[in-house]
Amino acid sequence: MSQTKPFSFTDRRRPRIVWRGSRLSLLFIVLVSSLASPAALGSAQLSAPTGYEVKTAFLFNFAKFIDWPPSSFTGPQSPFTICVLGQDPFGNVLDDTLLGKIIGARPLVIRHLTDKVEARHCQMVFVSTSEREHLTEIFASFQGANVLLVGETDGFAESGGTIEFTSEDNHVRFTINLDAVDRSGLKFSSKLLALAKIVHDERHSKRG
Image (tube, rainbow, N blue to C red):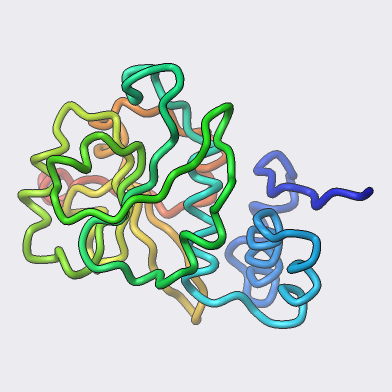
């Protein structure tokens, strides 16, 4: 039985695909198909994925191209947890798409939270735009935690978040804040960094 080829950053052609018009859509299809079952793959090829399907695929692949230290987990049998902090914009997409997926040897679990302190126990936290007024408090609460903070609020990365989803020409792209990466203690693949727009903390940029 043939298997769906997973998305890989090692394909030298793909960094050129990411930022160019219709070729960007091809990357999205590859991302989504890396998560789709064989039965669902046919329909995924017939229609363009929605924005949150693409973001779900990116979240899954972020997890695979970042080194997570043992201190990220409470124990060797702990699951890999993606949490949504605040109002969930994904609907059923995140839960349905990632159900049964594995990161390394760990089962992937989705949690929906309103408590930022509880979210420190997650490996990846998607901070909803509903929390835009509390970003400073949220970022401060994750000091010293090996947690990837992802959001889509305008200015999320430069404000101190790790990865910000952005939109350009109706396509989902992402920005990485290297200062936030350093604070998280996570090690990002150079290939992942090559696909992103790179920024620093806003206060750091102003000093420069």
